[in-house]
Amino acid sequence: MAWVVDASVAAKWLFAEPHSEQAASLLTNGEDLLTVDLLFAEIGNVAWKKLDREKLSDQDAALALADLREIGLTVYPVAELMEQALKLAKNHRRSFYDASYLALAMREGVALITADLRFYNALASTPLHRSVQWIGNL
Image (cartoon, rainbow, N blue to C red; front, side, top):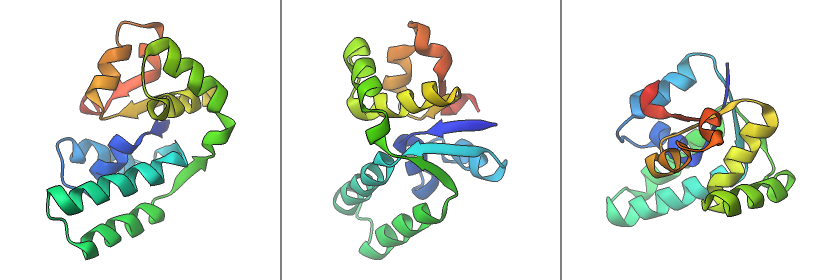
């Protein structure tokens, strides 16, 4: 099975957080994992925040980023999705970042799996709810 994964899921691969076990199952079950190149910048930002707030060491942050590069993700340029992402962001009042992952999922005909509960809940009552899955349901 193929999934689009967003940065909220990737963060759970790299840092011990709630639902890390469910996220890890995506890596061990032979799933095809797709994402947008934006994911790397978002994870870099997560690592930066953890350096300050959670006292993550510089070495552990660097290792996490290196580990992310080793994960077999199929990465698509967000530039290919910008128009659709902007429409989704505007119509559903979600960030362009979140909408970029959703635009990829829709284009590729697969579901987006997210650990961002606010994003998931915001789409739950819309026709897009079938395109988004909550990590806790794995």
